[in-house]
Image (tube, rainbow over all chains, first blue to last red; front, side):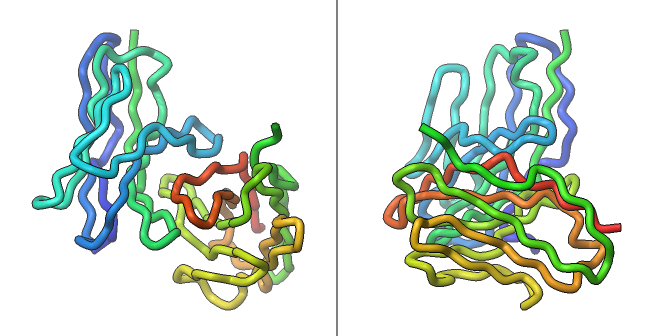
Length: 108
Length: 112
């Protein structure tokens, strides 16, 4: 079993839609989690860190469920510019463990 | 304020050759980590350097080695290249006491 697993993509949604991604992790000792955004052939950029139950930043909300060992990312009012690959993961003593990524395509 | 910089941006090598990739961390950062990202996959942790020593290592063979210099810059060396080493190699820098990492634009390595 992979340490971090994500919903398979791609997700194709219309502009304005709400979309949610889930990510499960196997290391119950993990303390910090994150979501990165990666545009095609570019480097990952930090979208949101999650240390407690959740975090919200504008249209983006991340939730952490330690009992079920998953984190989620909710994107409201999707924009064309949200099209990217979203990577979730956790920090294990200084090394980032990533899932395989979920591709999101927002259509007009 | 320059972020994480990597060189070269692209590289083409043949099987069996050796390659060296370079990374300069973001100003003020003292820790450098290297990741390999194959097509369609998430980045995989290779190793991390702090105070010129390898502090952590992922599940990569000894063909992958690295170095950190006194100015905190780092090199990743890969010997005896295999076709499967073709990937985007990402460098990330951080402060040792903090968790958030900034990534460089990466070096895209193609092994033919």
